Image 1 (tube, rainbow, N blue to C red):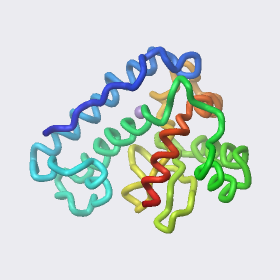
Image 2: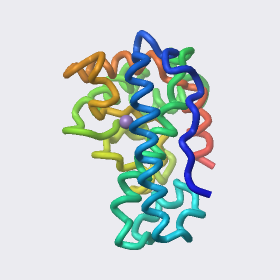
Image 3: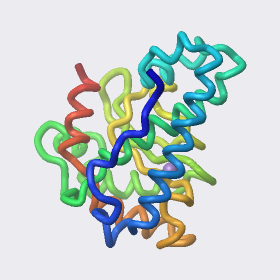
Image 4: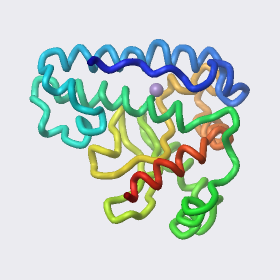
Length: 204
Ligand code: MN3
């Protein structure tokens, strides 16, 4: 019934040298576990909401009782964002998106390079902790946004299809203050097959 920490779809060292094993282990087993535990603790006060999907909770934050709304926004966001993030990366990732998504990216951003530049700049420019996202808008267009803290684009009516964590815990051990370098390496890990699946789901 309670939300469960999902297993990683690869080992902690699988994303080396782009993301180091120690960062992955702490990020998954401490940070993501922490968001999961705190989300479950909040929902214990209103167990009827624990039956809902995480997407439904984040899409309807105003429906959540005020005494747990901030906790669900922060920790439910953290639970959901990281669950997506692990699957958005792969040791076999990188390259460029093909077919429908590849064409849509060219239409929206001119080229893959235009997309990659804007995505990395937007994520690099998020002040403090947060996320950079490629999203599908309500009318089916692609857009690039950033969110603070653990806010998920779902809460703003957008469907996230690619996200990158720019909290310092995601990169500090290996990259220290060099967020842009981490973002460059992240592009070599993007699991475009999974992103394309999310893109087609978002347009249904
Ligand atoms: Mn994180």
